[in-house]
Image 1: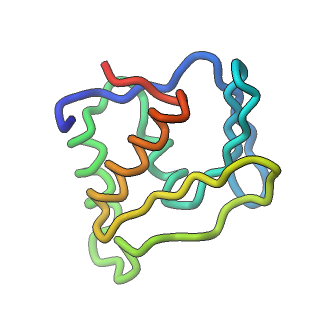
Image 2: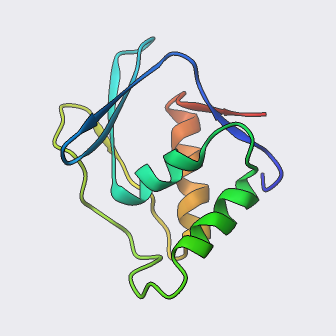
Length: 110
């Protein structure tokens, strides 16, 4: 998985809310609110970065952050599901979040 490049699906609608990001799959009408860690990972998914490059960017961005690697629980209030980045380390969070996004047909790997 490390050398695969995640890319966002084309059938998505993104809306920035005052308290976070909502992504809707237009084919299924499924609404997803992202936790702060999830939103950070989402911002790095561009179809050009590999999974490993995303992990490295997260590690670089969180260097020295004592809270890094902890699970987060804040996300916008919505009628849909909240997508959390779960795991003990930033690397585990990236992997679990990407798998969740794939299951929800929000991304694909190329």
